[in-house]
Length: 307
Ligand SMILES: N[C@@H](CCC(=O)N[C@@H](CSC=O)C(=O)NCC(=O)O)C(=O)O
Image (cartoon, rainbow, N blue to C red; front, side, top):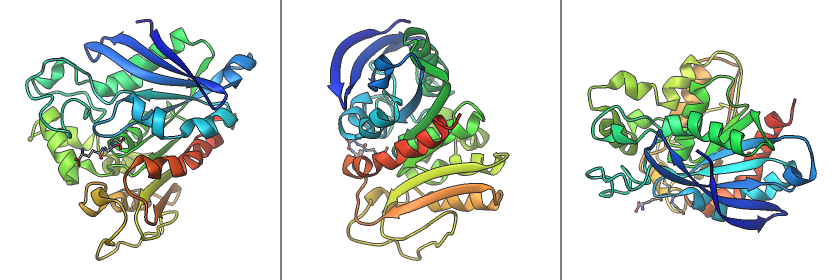
């Protein structure tokens, strides 16, 4: 369906469009933000696209307003898409009960368990319906050059969507991603609800630490996690006691488990480069994301602008 543009806001020399469209996969109107860098109006060349998937409780506004990805995107000539994190207002019983399930918590999967099959199809929305609609409506976007990144639940979405679709995205990176959802409380709750407790194979199909074991060929992934221990290029040191004090409470609670992802990548081959940077003192918030946003856009640009 075509997009309605509800606002146009100047940002870093380009334009942030607030968009809405009726989506079939999610059975509702979906809102999103699209950042068009200055190059999209000053050049005839099509511009590549970076998808930013947000975390629990977010809409497409959190990243657009607080993530600061537009700063580097405007310099590199990259468009940024900020989708919503779930369908809205479907009147599914229980969808607004908890912050970590239902509204604002679609987990970028297609639910197979009732009653969530009604529209909790964020995997299809993000990988198929949204890009198709965008490339039909915005001819200056280059559908053959897409990258993906995300935060927390959105980091899980970015990693799994990239790993499940070889060749579709040029690169992936993540901020504090839920890296092994089948082994953390957030993931267990979501997958139990959207797939069912007995669907272990389905759970694994949406777990980055499982998917990376099956990846064929080289990988180049950037992950930033707020904490106080240093990891670099798969050189793994698992802390016996997670650091206390400042840092990421969700990491400390075992919700993120990035070590499991690095370990799985490392075990699956020497050509899997995962640069996991533990960033001292930062917390899980958008202060962390905005600080390292330039690096993640640079990482995407390295792949999007290479050919
Ligand atoms: N309200 C919850 C915490 C929710 C939260 O921290 N959400 C994060 C993403 S967490 C993983 O997906 C977020 O991005 N929030 C929006 C923001 O603008 O910061 C609680 O009470 O624990």
